[in-house]
Length: 191
Image (cartoon, rainbow, N blue to C red; front, side, top):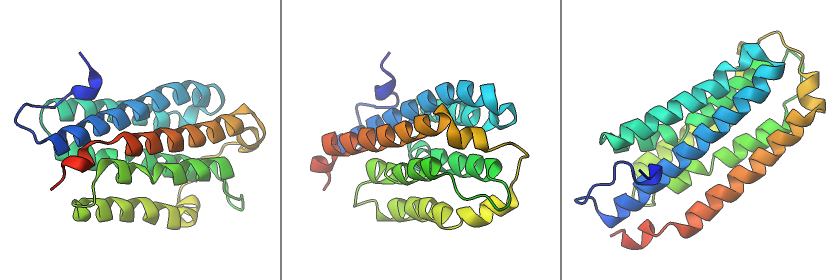
């Protein structure tokens, strides 16, 4: 069974088949990131493992939703789920008076490409709503940072391999999403 073809039915338009496949790819990517990031976070910040673990679980649920025909719901949630969890993680790890984690903010910027992958220009309402959620999270990250605080030492995150790994994930996320956009054939079927 190919994960990328979950939920693709014969009676679905070629455009929607492409978007369902992209949704499955994004959900699989998010599940992969959540799964592996959980180990690294648990090793150093066990109280924060809930965020990458939730990314894995929610992304897996989105694949199941797509398989059972809840494509619109899965597409919409997939467009911002990773950014919501990254924002919450960032807010939890930043202590009062700390500056933002630049590597995490770079990752969050890369995640704002997801709505552009999952929605075409003819789906303006969904695209604009999803982008508003994503950019709203970026704009209000400072407020969120003040509201949520878990007592952890952010120094290790700033000065260890976790920082470099987060930059690498940011670059990988951006590249993968841009490749997905470039290879998206569904746009040519849009009417």
